[in-house]
Amino acid sequence: MKVFFIGIGLIGGSMALEIKHKNPQAVCYGISRQDETLDRALALGLIDHKAVWEDLPQADLVFLSIPVDASVNALPRILDLIPDQSLVVDAGSTKQALCTAVAQHPKRRNYLAAHPIAGTEFSGPEAAFLGLFDQKTMIVCEVEKTAFKLQEKAMSLFTSWGMRIRYMDAAAHDKHIAYVSHLSHISSFMLGKTVIEKEKNESDIFDMAGSGFESTVRLAKSSPAMWTPIFDQNKQHVVAALEEYIANLEEFKSLLEASDRDAMYQQMSDTNKIKEILNGIPLNK
Amino acid sequence: MKVFFIGIGLIGGSMALEIKHKNPQAVCYGISRQDETLDRALALGLIDHKAVWEDLPQADLVFLSIPVDASVNALPRILDLIPDQSLVVDAGSTKQALCTAVAQHPKRRNYLAAHPIAGTEFSGPEAAFLGLFDQKTMIVCEVEKTAFKLQEKAMSLFTSWGMRIRYMDAAAHDKHIAYVSHLSHISSFMLGKTVIEKEKNESDIFDMAGSGFESTVRLAKSSPAMWTPIFDQNKQHVVAALEEYIANLEEFKSLLEASDRDAMYQQMSDTNKIKEILNGIPLNK
Image (cartoon, rainbow over all chains, first blue to last red; front, side, top):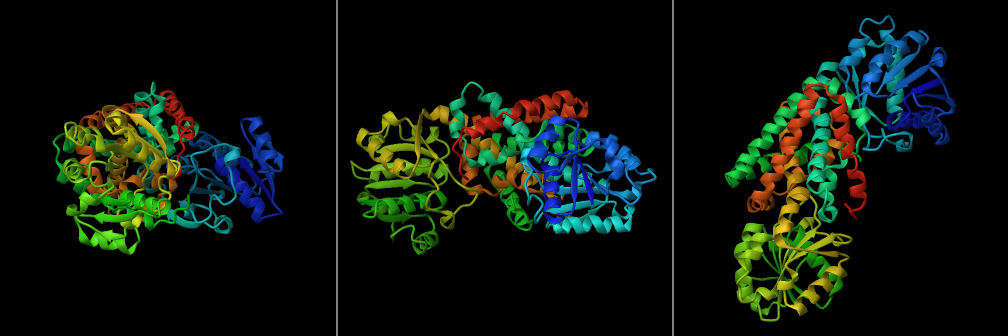
């Protein structure tokens, strides 16, 4: 089995490690815009060979893990090149644009739209590790548009990595993920920005930061190259989520200015139920 | 040595465990508004005896770890009651109001204003654990207003718990802590509120939440009883921090609406330096 990884960073690299671990007969090929990235992936043992687009007609399986704007251009070309029985899986954090881009493609049934709810704030081949997907959720969109045998193949791989599968339509995925993922990233980036700007001349101040601050700004370490196109591609839903978030912050500020302690208490107490919600999620950081 | 703990939750309880561990000759007394809390603290071995305010004339050392508004009322009364050579240490997240409240007290030199940069999102006696303060920072305010021998006694205790000491004036403490702690809590509470409101009828959606969301909303599990008075007491600085945070969110939203990808990328890239800043902090969660 020849498996191609287009993009071999945190996600693609961790998938390559799973494939090599669970499917020892697989031969892994890497494709990247930057040859130097492939050298690092090769040195780290994520891939067996460097490859180029012209090699794709040999692919049995292709994993696409590059920024979501690049994926929209790449996916139709990949489908053009692969054999009729091969499967392409992407891992992007937005699904609607990609599904739309290949809706009419003659090889649409060779594509499975997927989004692993897994990751860290780190990026690049060095960030990849075996086990990233264990106990995590794989969201699969428009599954009915993928050929049945290729669905089976993909699900068998995902479950071999320890993942649970959840099916959604692409529009619902993009709307909800704006709240539970994209908004968190912006809130964290802007929190980091606010504090860095305020304290830029007072580096000692970060001695005052504890694990709570570290937790809320963790996502501000994330890759701008990955996240800029995600926000832009999901603009409609992300802007709506941001507006609701800002409105809630404004309201809390008003309560604080009025010293309305009962109302502040009530809002925080109501939000405490996030404990039970999070306890229901199999999160392993 | 008779050590009194007024408030015996996460912070007071963890201090009691340190005292019992490092000073086996110490006898630990708990005082709480709620007798039931003292029963739990006794059962957990945090204290040796339940006590009442009328016992304070026996105290060698008093740790005050209750909501900051209650501390402002309690501290002058404690100072009234304790012997001349005894020490009172508080652990509140705001320092100015408390320092002002006792500025003219005849026993001001028996008080040390402290703020341990340590905690978790949990509260109550059950949340206390030995080691909470290890490798953490203790901020001490207006140290020159505490009697020299009592300073020495406090520093010796804090360093025996593994803490580093940082000295600040109370006004600077309150201003900077608004950014690196209080703002993080509000951003997290309001993120949790936004997502819970949006998704209240779609509990399945939390299957889509990953460790990134969990990290940014972790502080939304915090105690409203503790945090409401903190925000109110530090209103001036917290409102200023919130305004800057909201302005940054509004600006990012405008960039997104305009699809100004270069500017979004640049803001996130600039904020990535939070990595180096956080690497400089000895944070152990």
